[in-house]
Amino acid sequence: MRKYSFSKHVIIANGQFPTHAIPLEIIRTAQTIICCDGAADSLMKHGIEPTVVIGDLDSISSKAKKQFAGKLIHIAEQETNDQTKAVEWAIAQGLQDLVIVGATGKREDHTIGNISLLANYGTQINVCSVTNYGIFCPVYGTTQLTSYPGQAISIFSLTPHIPISLFGLQYPLTNALLKSWWIGTLNTAVSDSFTIESEEGICIVFRSF
Amino acid sequence: MRKYSFSKHVIIANGQFPTHAIPLEIIRTAQTIICCDGAADSLMKHGIEPTVVIGDLDSISSKAKKQFAGKLIHIAEQETNDQTKAVEWAIAQGLQDLVIVGATGKREDHTIGNISLLANYGTQINVCSVTNYGIFCPVYGTTQLTSYPGQAISIFSLTPHIPISLFGLQYPLTNALLKSWWIGTLNTAVSDSFTIESEEGICIVFRSF
Image 1 (cartoon, each protein chain N blue to C red):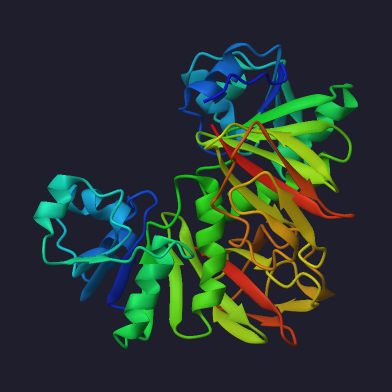
Image 2 (tube, helix red, strand yellow; image 1 turned 60 degrees about the horizontal axis):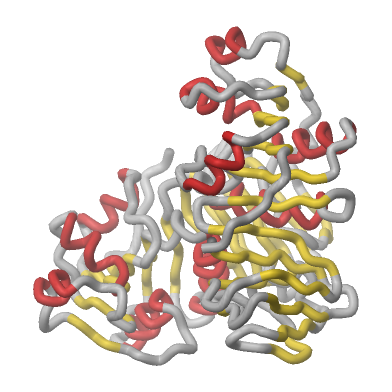
């Protein structure tokens, strides 16, 4: 496991509150903590003071509402989920680097949705999602990513009709179409970087800790 | 929550061992229990007797190996994961209805891969994956599915270039392209069935309990 450097601006999403040391350290050292409303009770339980609590505010307890009074930002709009509301608020504040934690580990359809939304956010800001197992980040076109030998790598294409090539992994690919989500999983890094090459492909990359 | 009727042939995959009453009841009443090797220790801990244990057998403890001696099926082949090895074994035995439990809840890249693999299996057998939150099933072309009013529904397209229509949901769609994974999430059933309509689209459907 490498030592990572993450943004000091953190969104705590509505999934499972982190248990792994890396996301917990990200929260502990954060400069800005943007809490999605469903996570407010977890923050209270863990003695964490958010900068703001954002969302519908329909899934926050009255106790947490009282505890975090003055920090609540109610956004009723139904077109986006709470994670997206938090990201949009952060962008409006001028925050350009965000790390999202707690976005996975409960309902799997939320997990899959939240991970894919990184590709939407990433056109505007630097963003990644850190789970109890690793890091998800969006990748556009040809990109080199850092790794370490033996690191588990999975690559999901959000543009399965666009060919991609992979260099520097145990199982390289040349102009492959990742037509199903499983096809790019269970790869392994062999050195300190690897490259995804495509014209206009959009991928989500998972790197294990 | 509805009462469901599931297959008596169960695969216990390598993810988090179930905690919800529905997957636990599926295991308790199973006629055939096919255990993926990484899950063998969980089965031993829960006092569950598998029919067979299948996989690389590289992640099973020596204690579980001894406990389940005579039931171990070693398949070294590296092209498929343990869930797929278990499904292929089941198909070879003539089992036509399978329910998979424990396929999610650990590494999210495994979760996403395992869920998408349902679309591969579903061309040969009836199959679904039951988690602690709901049921995933593969859907090909136009299909009507059972539901109940208020049931959370998420639809993921594995063929994002093929238009699909949705009828009988709170947010219907007409000839829509689900170009990202999040677009078809967070829908709700309004009655006891809904329909996905497409020429040749392949979807994975999540229905909450």
